[in-house]
Length: 300
Image (cartoon, rainbow, N blue to C red; front, side):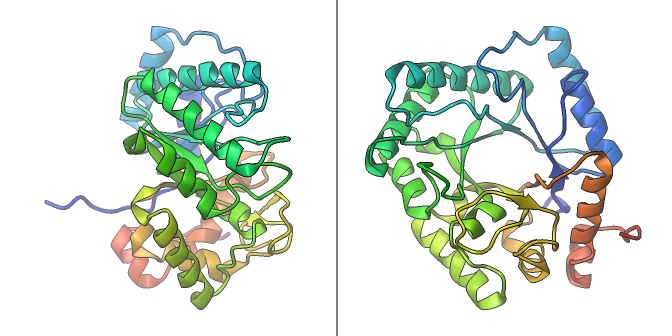
């Protein structure tokens, strides 16, 4: 029997007060999926998670209808660093993130590929692939690392589909690598998907270069900056330069119904997440709402 599809939509939730608190916040917001950091995202050190914390988190997930949970790796990790010490710290940190994901039964770990700094992009790609292989080789489990598409700021790797595809092709652990597509990032990197024709062309290019089957997570963000700006500035859905049509095309595209979609839009409170989710629900066609059993929206 085929499982009932649902609208997989959520947001990045704080773990302040404990990992399980993210699930409580997700329930309050109406998430059906969500993303967390498993520790402070700007610190190398991570204290061990207690068995009690793990059990609380698992119980909270089981009691909710939120699934899957996505984790985002620390921003400090840079597998492409020209400095050996930084690469070693990055691999150790990535292994720890994978270990925690395994303990929490989290299937996807989103990772910024890295910055090549004073090297060539090709050298950076090779180092990233090597670092991923080492971390995955030494991390038993099934968690998939979803390499995030980047906006192209500075020396970051991953602003083109070709760069991500090359990292994948060089890897010896392909079964545990996927992609997280960020709508703001790809728009800023120069990929236009704001209307039907270019939307289909963008996905055709993604499929030909990377493969749709490798798309594991989508970060849903509008962009404060113009197409091709190479500047990473997220904006409220339909309030930025990407606009409503692109998000309507994405959320009514049956190919991606089973891909978790995570908001990383600006917020001060959970109210902004609720607002963005209701905006998205308002973009769904009648057919999509019926298929995904989406209830009528509150006034956005």
